[in-house]
Amino acid sequence: MNIRHLETLLAIADSGSFAAAAERVGVTQSAVSMQMKTLEEELGAALFDRARRPPVLNDTADGLLSRVRELVRLSEDIRAVAAGTSARGRLRLGIIPTAATGLVPAALARLAVRAPELRIRVESGLSADLLRRVAQGALDAAVVTETPRLERGLVLNPIHEEPLVVAAPIGAAGRTDRDLLRTLPFVRFNRRTGVGRVIDTALRQRRIVVSEAMELDSIEAILAMVSRGLGVAVAPAESVTEELRETVRTVPFGNPAVVRRVALVERERGDVTAATALLLEELRAGG
Image 1 (tube, helix red, strand yellow):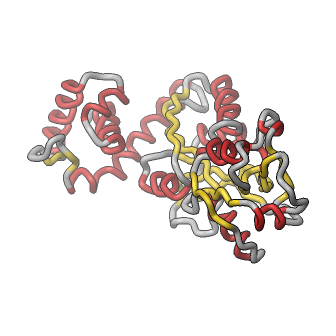
Image 2 (cartoon, rainbow, N blue to C red; image 1 turned 120 degrees about the vertical axis):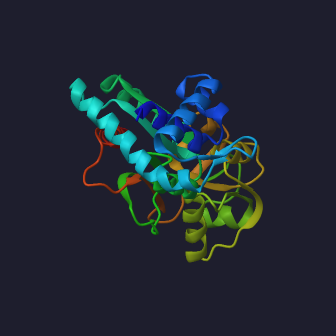
């Protein structure tokens, strides 16, 4: 059985179509179709419902995916051992949007120097969705806002803690976080995001009632609204750049400040892979 065919099957499962899988694995769409026909012949079973357009995985294929993922991972580990290198092959990484502009790019740049043969694919998403995709095996690991409820089979590796601040227009009246939050329109982080849930919980625990004006899931969009004088927000301290400080002022959110914890989540195994171990080192070095 050709391991490349199994990798293509996973690419179809993760991307949703033969065309997208072809782009991901670097072959033509007709080559993908031929690989899948060969794989079905070897297995003696159909893997796709071809009555639908485009074809979709059938129940037989769905039942095989977890074992196929383990076979592909084992193949990559064997290649790494044979090549005498600690990290090569593929790493599929998910990241939350608030980690996409500072923490992760710097860590990936350092990792590229340490493991030049490691191929990394990065996808952005909300913490809940990334956790689900790691549990399903569609991602190898993900950088998320730490959550108290974790699905069985997953493990969180803490990276760092980041204080939250109240960000307000530079000329806004009010000295404390409570003053600003109670008197200005509130630009809320989407409550489906990890940091949004942390903020919402803290507001309720501190009995701060806000006048909600917007709910967004982009930190850049939220701070742009604040910068334009349209309201006040709670945001990770590192997201307020020096450039923004010309139009935005900040005060701590709480005393001591409320923090959000960022972690790397992966499936629980006997030991971490070389790639995720190196990535975790670099994330912590920059955290």
